[in-house]
Length: 61
Image 1 (cartoon, one colour):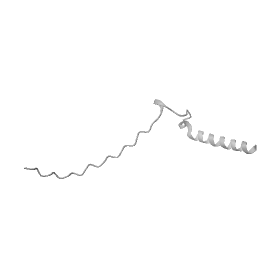
Image 2 (spheres, rainbow, N blue to C red):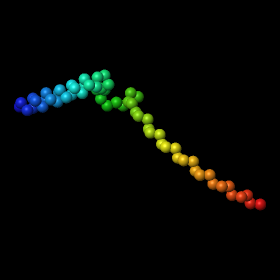
Image 3 (cartoon, rainbow, N blue to C red):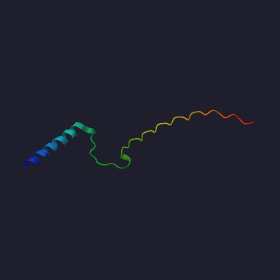
C-alpha cells in the first residue's frame, strides 16, 4: 500500500512540475476539430530543375 502511495505522490509531483514548467503554453482542452484546430502547412515541394535546352533542329527546305 505504501508503494502505491509513493508512486502516486511521485507521479503527481512530476505532473505538477511539467504543468508549472509549461506555464500558459500548455493546452489542456483536448482534441480539437474544425476551425479552431491548428494545422501545419504542407511542406513545399522542391521545384524541379528546368529541362536542359535542346538545340533546335535545322529547318527543312
